[in-house]
Each structure stands twice: as C-alpha cells, then as structure tokens.
Image (cartoon, rainbow, N blue to C red; front, side):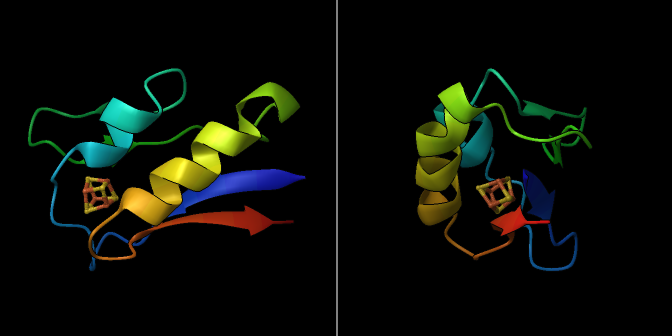
Length: 65
Ligand code: SF4
C-alpha cells in the first residue's frame, strides 16, 4: 500500500504537488497541501511519484506501508 505524506517542516507551500496531483492533493487557505490518509489508488501511482519528484524541498513523499 502506498501513501502520500508531507513533512510540514520542510514544506514551503509552493502548491506544485497539488498542480501535479489534483485528484488527491488539495491546498488549504495558506497554500499547504492536504493529503488523503488512505492508500493511493493504483491508477494514480505514476502521478503520485511525479508529484513527489517535483517537490522542490523533498517534503512530499510516496511511502510504502
Ligand atoms: S510541492 Fe512540496 S513544498 Fe510545495 S506545497 Fe507540495 S509538499 Fe509543499
């Protein structure tokens, strides 16, 4: 099972992850990402990997649980 996580200390609220993966990630009123707690669907794994790779501060991770 894969989950998207965000390190709130490293995140700089660029919002890039939500642009790459709008199906799963939204941003709050300050621009910080809100990620779902549940597993990333198989159909969105490639986009989730792309979103993690695009994060300029490495705050967004795709973790196997
Ligand atoms: S791309 Fe990275 S730094 Fe930017 S909002 Fe997403 S997690 Fe935060």
